[in-house]
Image (cartoon, rainbow, N blue to C red; front, side, top):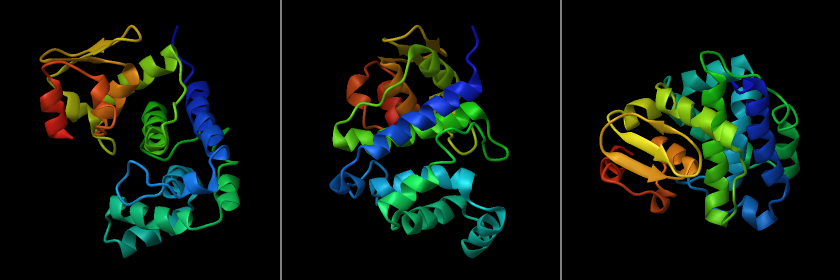
Length: 208
C-alpha cells in the first residue's frame, strides 16, 4: 500500500520536534554533525525553508551572490542564536505541516528532515525513530534525489541492500546495512558507516 506522503512527512517533522523539546540547554549548544553548526543552528535551518518569507529569501540570496548553501549557513546561525523558546515557537507551523518549498518533492523534504534529525541525535547518542514504511519511502526517495540532496548520483552504480527492512536498489558493488545508515550514507553523511559493510562502501565514502 502506498505511503500517504503528507502523513509521512508530518511524522518525520513531528519526530524531530519531539526530540528538540527534550534537549537540555547544553545539548542545544552541542556541535552537530554539520561542521561548524550547533544543534540549535540545525533546528533553525530545518524550519527556515518553510517559514522564511520570499522577500527575505531573495535578499539573502542576493547578499550571498546566489549561493544558496552559503546563504542558508549564514541565516541558520543567525536564527540559531535566538532563545530556545523562539526556535521551538518557529516549529509550531512546521511540526504539523506537509507544505514544502517550491521545486521540491515531499519525500526529498522528509529525507532532509530525517538526515538533519540524525545530525542532532548521533553526536548525543540518541536514537531517531521511524518505521519500515517511512524508511522504505525515504530510501526510494534518496536514490532518486538529485538537486539539493544529490544522493541519486552519489549512489549510482552501487547496490544497496537494507538488512532491517525489505528494500534494495541498483546493481554493482554491494553495501549492506540498516536503512537509516544507507540513507545517511547516500546523503553524504558517514556517521553511521560503521553499521555498513560491503565492497561498495569504499566507493560510496569516496563520493561523500
